Length: 414
Image (cartoon, rainbow, N blue to C red):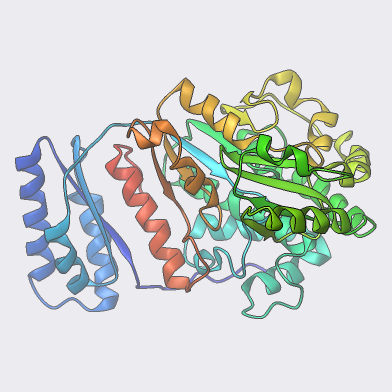
């Protein structure tokens, strides 16, 4: 099934620019005059915004943007707009993994943004007979199968991340770098052309089926450095992810992880369960990793067509690594070293970091990096930090588009 695109008239981005601040201010006044010429209905507002962006925005180095749902809101927002220098830092896309998922993540973009919609439809088609059920649960307020289940979280994180990246590319911007967390690295590999979406879906379907026979496990986010947690680890419980210097994820079998969680809480650590039914990135899923070779051994691999920073090697992915089936199979059990990989990325250059997935967990970590603190790099996100309305999804996407525009990238997000 292919969804019918909606004639939506909610939030729009309005863009303008100038060669200097005086010309920027002139553009802001002209935009205000255009919006105030006559009462503009909600239906007409989208047309006015599209015409303005196509003909009047300019391409100067001093830029401005607002996001508004109607002409009155736009007129109210314009006085608060401030000029932004077009730094033209490359965009690095960040793709989150298991634990970031939530109900109806990005569903507000489906049927609204055409490239996003087509990319999600492609995913559902590749899922075969399961595709319609996954789509229905994704769009439902009360899904039949909860989104935290592997059979929903994994394909939807792949689909949403890939669809958001395709949306950005459809706006006319080639990402300068890619970095994924857990299954997010699979998304990055598809975007970089290492393997096809079809191969990624086939691998994921195998993983979901094999996961049903794995012993119960889990993951815990702990507000502490990995080194501080070493005395508490035992059995299958290991450091599953290093997300920032003081944000570590532990993973392992359920009973052992529960005992470790009790000890940590008694010792005064902040411990939060990560929504996952398995102990990903730990020895608890070694068998699941090995089983993936059945599918990954038949995949056709290519060298990355975009710089892909691996959260497993903490360096740009090489052609040899990209073509190694075991490199991809073992990722489900190996620790995710997101922070060291981010550190390498930001040591290599300054970027506008854009999270292409739900919950904003990655850019929350990125805000603690010295490059972002010192304003050498910056962050934004395609989706809201928390579950919300369809209108909130659309406004977040357009706000990110506006931020990318003010950075100096001549995108066309309409």
